[in-house]
Image 1 (cartoon, rainbow, N blue to C red):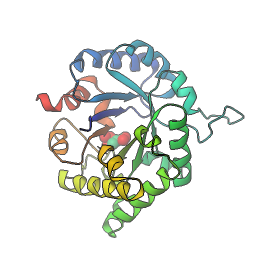
Image 2 (tube, rainbow, N blue to C red):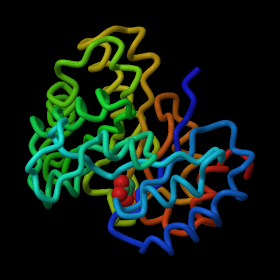
Image 3 (cartoon, rainbow, N blue to C red):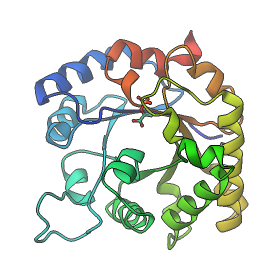
Image 4 (cartoon, rainbow, N blue to C red):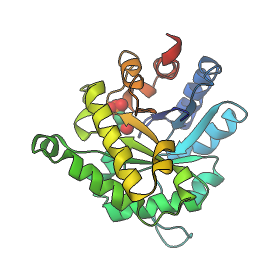
Length: 253
Ligand code: PEP
């Protein structure tokens, strides 16, 4: 049985005070959400304070990115995965489409970040997904297969327990245009098959695959009803505690 994960990506929004306020507002609203892991990813500067204030709650904290470098050193502007853990994070998002497309992150960088996260004791949420053009050209599966195989290359069997995949079609992120539950299910099943080919059927069966792309309280139940959808990575709709809590509590509605 795969435990769902509902993760909120706060992107570059909220000061430390605003992040703490929102996190504390979320806490009582998801306190009974034992059916899933609840994760929020504030900006780097707010991670420590938010994690401290959430200590003992069922909300875990994620970094939105980490350095490809594992060791501290002369890398201005970078933060290691270990530093995220030191600040109180338990997860790290790697390969988000905004990192890939706006900051030109390559599959090789995503792989190093994934490995850095895992070797530092974090669970890596690795994002994959095709652009609209790639989908329209019939290339969606090839793109996702390439991102998946490259990103997960070199991981050992025990590393796989610390991997969560997120399928985030680029055309659905922040656009209000959600993949239909059927479109998402089709790609999630494909990801599970590719993962089984590259690793093992057992590891693929245990792999959590989140959907991301304009998830809202209105569409979460339909997505979660799909066999291979094991949670959601939520951007815009995670910024308000009440809305995010409705997504987290999708099965209680
Ligand atoms: C995201 O940032 O990962 C995301 C899916 O954003 P949104 O929910 O706003 O589409």
